[in-house]
Length: 462
Image (cartoon, rainbow, N blue to C red; front, side):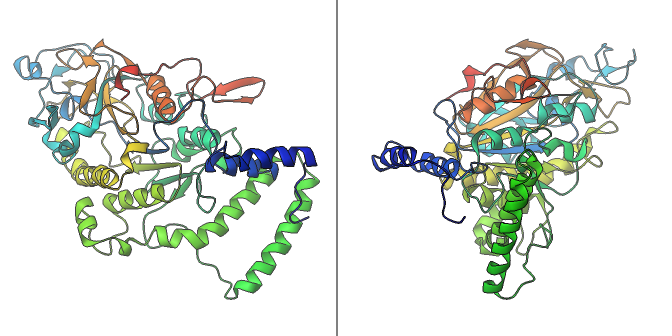
């Protein structure tokens, strides 16, 4: 029955008194109200400790960009060019020879962090970035490594990091999904990288395809708002009765919640995707043209608009399983890939900062693995999992620093190793979550994003 709260008088008065006393903030009031009404699916929830970041922006550059050609310069490669060196890589061959980077490195910012010419624009915000040079992962193939970076598992598909964050923290805006994925082309492993898997389906990432119709059927075919409201009330009544007869079917609850979100999106989303509301100066900052709604720059703008409107986790996936950063043939293939994202990423970070959003928005820029310091053909590099680079910025992260160190060739880790599990543990920590406590019981076991591993990188915390 509409307006009925299934609680007794004592619980209601206790809860009301607590709220009236102001002990709980707005976020806790919303969560409490949702729980009283049998909800709580998307209402914001409290973490395990005070959070430095309230939102997560996860940017994935598909294909494995080369650390020694972007953020981890190795002059020794030029000195020892041509020397044969065995590496653990995709192809086992004694003919792999050291190859220097064809790209010039320049120090940037007060910190002097070196960035290659591929990321000259991103270098302009070097003092806001933490460059983690000691990343490593487990499997040297795209599919498995992409899964690992998103789900913590390189073998068995598990819930995505965005799904875990949504499950643990909810969202601030019930009219928009808690986890949105801007994805023009599916990456390796496809939709599994933003799937909720065994978590309730409501936490699955909602894919947005850039273009004129980012979300199909977003416009209501019903002209009369009054008629639409009447039809919706009748449908809600039918759905509630149907769900009450099947209390163990989580898919029913999730489906009803997704329909409710869809209704909200029909009102809220058109405004979010309308980049015509942005000033020419802002468009120029990102490198977007007026009327552009498909480029990576436009996607970065949409990401910022989603974040400032209460979406908890936004993911940007640059390119799909083809024509990406996988430069086996020639490292010069990195140039057009970097040109597509460099200015947009720099503009996004600058825009978040000037709007006061960067302080409590955690930005993660990552890839699935690195590339070998060696070459088979004199121009390209192979997959490499023993050392690569990812970045963090914003909410609670020390900017203008590098973490970890590789040897003189960028081949072996020599200090402060960071496994993908550690990267995830640190992200969750900054969002106010203890990665060992964000669990979900499934098939008789408590699962988590970091499995039985992971440690927080305390040295990078502001």
